[in-house]
Amino acid sequence: MAKKIVVLISGSGTNLQALIDAEKQGVLGGKITLVVSNKKAAYGLTRAADAGIPTFIQTLKEYRDSGKSREDFDCDLAKHIASTQTPDLVVLAGWMHILSPAFINFFSGKIINLHPALPGELDGAHAIDRAYSEFVDGQRTETGVMVHYVIPEVDKGEPILTQKVPCVEGDSLEDLENRIHAVEHQILPKAVKLVLDRVV
Image (cartoon, rainbow, N blue to C red; front, side):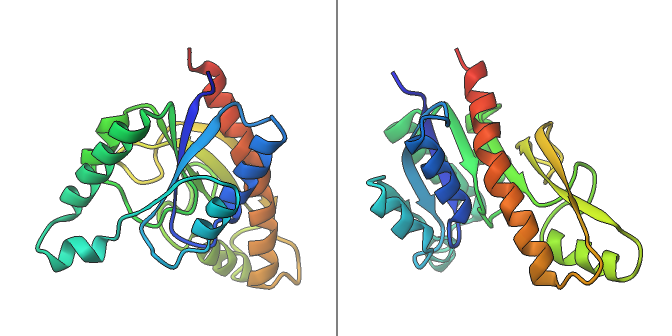
């Protein structure tokens, strides 16, 4: 029986597409059974629908508007995923919502995240922008991408795969972004397979 993967997204879903393509080619090591978005307008939902993958939308605004907390949001989302999917792996692929221990502990050791920086560098949001600023200021000649296990400390979990990305003289921010995204699309499916191959 195929190992179950749940993918969490917030935006256009280009990394989700890389996972969908890898599954079609038989090199993902599992089956994407659900795509979750915290944004109703995320184009990744269309990518999922086009691939015949069920989707689920849960927005933080709805929780805030009803007086509920981020922890309530995370706890309910974890329960929904666990009860409907029992996933072998949860993949954060452009998920722009910091998950609390309420979610992380529910799937301990089963959540991985893609982050556009190397371990110990540029944790948190806007990592590409910050790398580019440091490059322009002469403080950086390369950056990178990592896929890591998720723990409560943001972007501090054990790395699974990393790859350096050069900053090239004359680069615009868009040039660097495109180079980083191309690497993301390569290493995320590989990391998913690596992790799932360890799941008995």
